[in-house]
Each structure stands twice: as C-alpha cells, then as structure tokens.
Image 1 (cartoon, rainbow, N blue to C red):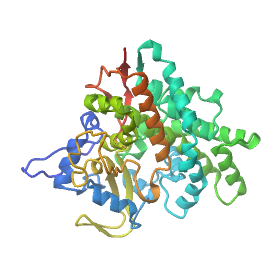
Image 2: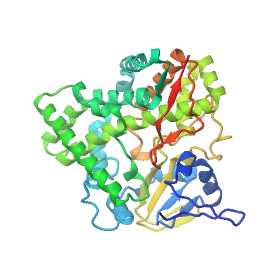
Image 3: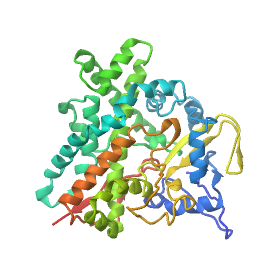
Image 4: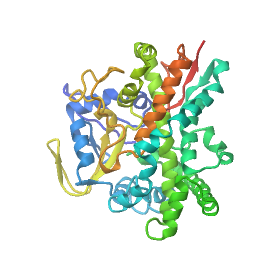
Length: 411
C-alpha cells in the first residue's frame, strides 16, 4: 500500500497508512500534524485530504464539489469496475449521486426521519433499550457492542423498514456493514469479491422484502418506496433495492459506533462519566460532544466538478477529495482544547453527520437512540466498568470508526 508523507516543520516525515492498526486505534495525532503542515494535501494515491473545519464546511456546501461517483471509482480502481455488484449497487444510492437524482431519491424517504416522527419514537425506543438491558442485567457483564449498541438500532431500523421479526435473527447477530467500499483506499481483489457476495445476498433479501410488501402493505418505509417504484417515474427497481439496503446499513451503523466509541471515551476520562451520573440532564449535550470527540464517521468524499481554490490551494477539475470529518471535529480553530472530552462543552457544531445536501438523514434518530442508551446506562449501571478500555478492539476500517467488541462489567 502506498504511504502518505506530508512534510512536518522539523524536516522529518510522517508515514500515513489509513488501514494501519496504529492509525485506526488513534488517528488524531496524524490529523493534527496534517492540519498544521499541509491542510490541503495531495496524497501519492492521487486524492486530496482536507483537514481544517473551515475548508471542510465550505467544500460540503459548495456546488463546485459533487459526488461524481463513476469518475471517483475510475480514479480509484481504473476502468471497468462499475459493473462489480458491490459498486453497481452503491451507484444507485442517494449517498453517491448528485442532483437531480439525489433530490428525487432523498425526497422519497425524508418524511420518515422528520424531527416530529423521530420524537414520536421516544417511548418505543426507551422500551427497547430497557428490554436489551434486561437481557444482561443479572449477569453483571455484557459485550456493549453485541448486546446493546448493535441490537438496539438494528431493531429500530427493522421496525421502520417493516422487516418482520422472524427475519431479524441474522441481522441481530453481528455487523452487517463493512464500509470499506467507502474508504479512499481501494479494496483488494479478495475484499471486493467478499463485498460482492455480501451485496448479492443482501439484494436477494431486500427483493424478497419488497415482494412481501407488495402483497402485504404496511405502515412502513419499504411499503412507501414500493409504491413509489410502482408509480413508474420516481424510482427504478435497482434504486428501490439499493436504497433500502442503504437505509438499513446507515440506519444502525452510526448509532452502534456512537454508543461504543462514546462509552469508551467516557471511561477513559472517568470524571466525565461521573458528571453524567451526577447530572443526567447533561446527556443530550454529551451526545454532541461524544460525536465530536470520536466521530462514528471519520471521512466523506467529494470530487471537484470545476477548478476550485480552497485553503489557498488550487484543485483542478476531476479530482477526488476526502473531507476528514474527524479532523474537523478536533480543529483548535473551532474548539478550545479539542482533545479534551467535555460533556458540558457549549456551541458544538461537529461535522460527524456530514453537511450540505448529503447531511445524514438519520442524524436526529441517532441522537435520540444515543441519548436514551446513555440515560439508561447511567440509571441502571452507574458502576459500569470497561476492563479492556486501554486495549480496545477497533474495526479495521477508516471511514466507519467503531469497535468489534467492548466488554463491560458492573456490580
């Protein structure tokens, strides 16, 4: 794998391998160095890195930056890869398309994620949180990722999509999202083959789910999307399947990582856990700070649709640009003492949900799920401890930052 070596002031160099376990364990020192020495940096792999909050916020709003998914894939993999099942499937999702297709696709699902609809789910979600914790309460231990961080948001998104309870077993067992396809580093042939197999299996299931909702419509998002597809002018069959799969994955992955990363951060700085125990009213604000401090999503990608000057550097048209959201969230120009976790921090404008027209649809849902989980943990397991907090098991993934497991014990 190629390395990235931005210059540093003392004349040395720093090698960056975004899939290096050491980097995945703690990417923030690299982000700081990059911001200070090369905030708009072209890597040897050919794509650009943006690391300052100001530049990233601008590029996410500026219409001179778009997705240009086909061009990005060609720059990353070379020609003739768009027909790979995993890549073709992603190409039909609202995540990687530009207007007008993005506008059309997003409009079909927006109403399911309005603030009012999400607020109406509060009682149901708190009940689900308690049910998951009831399963482990008497054991005095759990794997936070397996037993609550993963299970809860999977159940919630299954409810929203109308996935029958008898179909959920495989989804509840473990992570269903690799996320590696979103990384700026290309997948190996072996990784791509595995992603293709997973995509094709997912497509089979989501086709079956759509067929079920054609025969037996319900008050759920899949039924709404099936109706849009049947109207004939709003959604193709490929877009229907691909975007239901996207909603399923995105609908739980951010929350899973928010809970895991957040609980780990609180127990690495235990005074902040004590603050939440003493004053649970801080929890909604703490969610914003936890998302800032160790973002579930570390980067997003755009392409230059025309020549653009940003941060004093001119980027030609047709270049791939990576916005390091995790770096923006720790920019000292935006936050005082950015490497300190402070659950009472004010004026948090974190970039963890992206920005512009692609701002995360499920942001409010993830916030609510996180708030209710941390509230329940503080109330029910105030003496919770994380025995492996100093040696956590990070997923080998750059874009989606999360843990594979997080053992917890309590008295």
